[in-house]
Figure 1: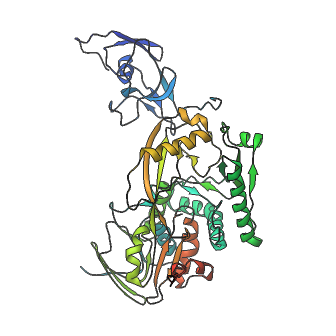
Figure 2: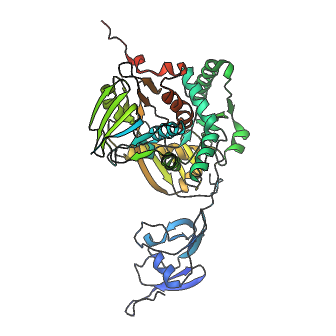
Figure 3: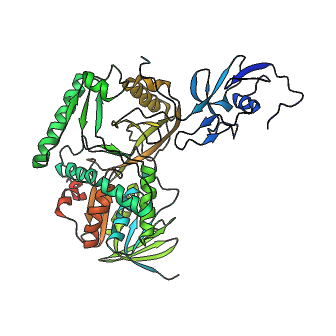
Length: 100
Length: 373
């Protein structure tokens, strides 16, 4: 459904749920999710409903993803970086209690 | 505009007012619930949502009993509201703990709980100090700085926004009349004959219940009552949702049914100032991380402040006007915990026209200390 503009120089390569996509510098991880064509990037913690990025401006939290191993990040507020790994956020994050 | 006539007018649409108003409709009264509007301070929408007994009532066993009674009636409240509205208030009452960080704190806490146990007399008051591996098993990932926790079996928590929603819905479906934006502009009070001027017209009622929180201070004298309450600011931080990890609430950290973790319990005497301050928020966060180090990995997604409604001794104010019988005042800072007592016990007393002697310790007369010569 989403394509890059023809003049875009897609130079930053990231992985979205195992799919390699390239985005222009300065694009958001949420844009990468849309470019990758995923059906959903997260499932809500309460009802398990599927979600894709929506507001693209940090408000709706529908783009929550695990980015480079950190769960529940707002993908629309994170700029893509070469080699970034973006994975779906399924439900609420788990907590590691042996952190200390 | 013709005046509207009711058996009772409840002033204040927060948790205290809506619990009483619903309770009055259950007694068969025609009730109007007057809610101020979005300019109100609305402690009911900013609270921490504990149903809490532990530690309450030092120096006033009647308050311990009233609180215990309400906590014990909460399952009935949940069931009645669920049946009337279909709204699940998410009551969870596994007992609660208070975390202690030093031997002195433990000693002080145990002394407090022992005083409360003695004050409770034949009613009993169960509490226990939990330490070491038992504490580690009870609270996953508890930090090494927490050296003990006091536990009581009576405590729990709810979803307080759903509680407020359910009380309003139950009130209206029982035939109550909810009036928004109904700030009291004028009032005349005679025994069992009250006229309240509001933007929605004049309300006539033979009973009036002042449950307007901090607004009671100005309203009470119009009805021959006193409500010397002052604001006490509390700030709350809320984390992102996480899988259920905390099996029971603590006094300042709890995990909600949806998975967010609420951090709170700051106390500031800052007048009617609702601003949030980085230093207080940092203190709340630091204490939370000292309690559960894994909290440091969670994002804070919301924060707010609200004003508690505090009397000088922290206990509620319940009283019927002597000069204008039929007018009652109800003030407290535990609208969640006491919701069951307000709906099931206080409302029937108001409907009956007389407060039970068990509430005699809560008249505002206790604040009338003559000034020293």
